[in-house]
Each structure stands twice: as C-alpha cells, then as structure tokens.
Image (cartoon, rainbow, N blue to C red; front, side, top):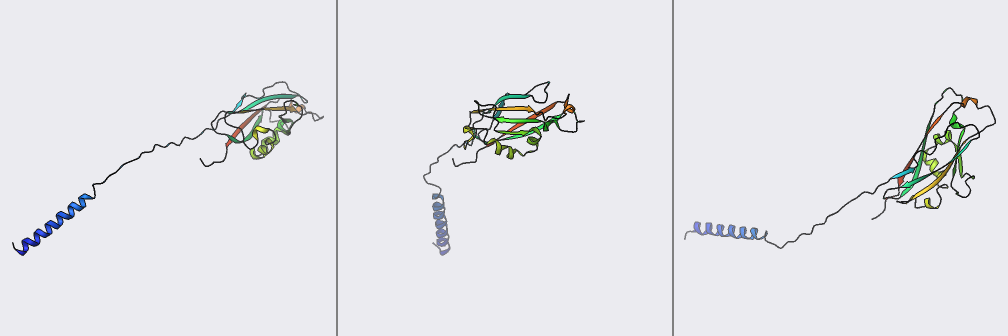
Length: 196
C-alpha cells in the first residue's frame, strides 16, 4: 500500500474515531422535574353599610342627628389604614357664609356614652383637611380592632357620628331653604408587604 493510501486511510480512521467520540457525547442519562407555581393576588374590598348615612329635611340651627354605619372589610387582605375624603356642595351660592361651616361633625365610638364626642370638626374643615390628617384623628376613633392590626379581613367596625347644625346665637336666616349634599369616600390601604 502506498504512502498516500496509508495516510488517507489514517486520516479517515481518525475522522471516524472523532465522529464516534463526538456522537458519544449525546448519549447520557437524564431526568426532569417540573414545578407548577402560582401567584394569586389578594383583594381589598372596603364597604360602608348603609351607603347613605344621613338623609334629613327641614333641619334648623340646634338640630342634632345621630347616625351609625359599619365599615366592612369584605376582602382577603387586612386593611392597615382607612382614609376619609370629604366633599360637599351647597345648593344656594348666594350666601355670604358656607353652610358647611355651620354643620359640625361629632365622631363618636363609645356605645355606652354616645353623647361624648371623640373628635369634632365642621364639614368645611373636614373638606379642607388632607386624608392623612383625618386618619391621625381616626386612630383614636376606631378602637381596639384598629390598633396595629387595622381592619382585619372579614371583620367590620361600627361607627357612630352625629351631625349638628350649630346654633351660633346669631342671625342664620341666609341658610333657609339651602341644602347640602355630602360625599364621604373611605379609602382602605393595605398592610406593608412581608416575607412569605
């Protein structure tokens, strides 16, 4: 056999050997494990019952109207904070004064002594306060349930509020025939995130 043939046969044998070695790297044991993972977000569902807290007619200076309502956490997450946004409109804009400055809101929580307000302010002042400033006042209103836990999922708090048309001892005739439409929006905020 000639040298060329021997060299060609050697190169071919080497190539065949390399291809067998290369092909052998594809033959191995293997196994797989599959995991199925879920991220399900919780829900915040704050509700007020009833949705109309007060609806009265023919009020006059000196009248007081006591009402109760529940804040309910119908969601799956605890609510850490509840903010109160206040807005109102007065039907008669010819008045010199704002009727909201003469309607005092007395927030109450002691069921046995409903005549002792925990915090009082006028609707006008309440409307001009930031929700965070109102929240600072509410910390004393919501009682034990509201401590560090907030409003726990599936629970509710019963609140009492008294509206008072303040008799300032002066002429308040400009408010005759007026009406005030009040909107309270309660905003529930979640607790801080945590390691799970």
